[in-house]
Amino acid sequence: MAGQININSDMGESFGRWRLGSDAELMRFVPTINVACGFHAGDPHVMRRTVELAVEAGVPEIGGHPSLPDVLGFGRRRMLIEADELRDLLMYQVGALQAFARAAGRTLSHLKPHGALYAMCGEREDLALALLETARALDPALTVIAGGPAMAAAAAATGVRAVPEGYVDLAYRPDGFPVLERAKRAWDPREVADRAVRIVRERRLPAIDGTTVAIDVPTVCIHGDVPNAVDVARCVRERLAAESIEVVPLARAAAPAAPTPRQRS
Image 1: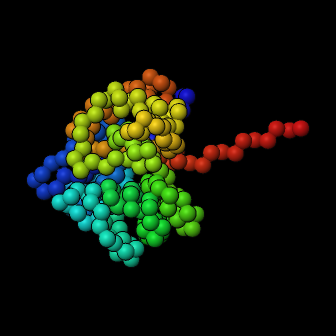
Image 2: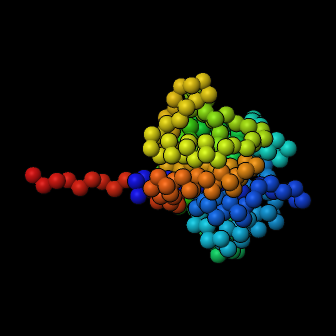
Image 3: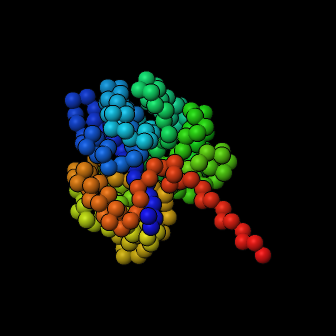
């Protein structure tokens, strides 16, 4: 294979009688899923069922997708919040999902904050530390999918592995941050597949102003609430295979590179 990448996807974002996404179909194309924990979407029944579907489908990695408490805004509106509040919100949400995973015979591999919380943790050092310290308390083996200027220092301080992700179904601002959408629009699957290949091959993508931003990441996200997410994921997998790019679990994609053996003099 001439390259590798992980694909993660946000799932379990239905609520009560309201349905969003085609999780069971999408699971066939992604090795890493992030399950909503009830604060922006999801509920106890949806959380349990999403974990069970992932186990039945043989999904390698199941993780938590905690959010700010904002069901009405789907977790995409910023809130004033302190670090201690965030610790409790994360423990409450991910701890519940851990219980469902344990009941299904699995453990969580990672967590990824959702929406506005993702951006806030990337910007504020106190929230980044709260995120990683809580992940360590929940399970020291958890990987955190989160990027932004504050995350590298927090990862170094806590010893928790934090990895950034790229977006194939979101546009980028010139500063490297994605353009958040309150409601996801459909994307041309071929365009998304092209973007995935460019991330692997070139480590960059165009921004909305025509400039180029660096996207050096081990994983890319396909959002489960994109209206045509299944078609997008299928096209991305087909295109990556045609380009001899292997899709691997996050644990493999984010593993530190092995040192190059020294040549004998």
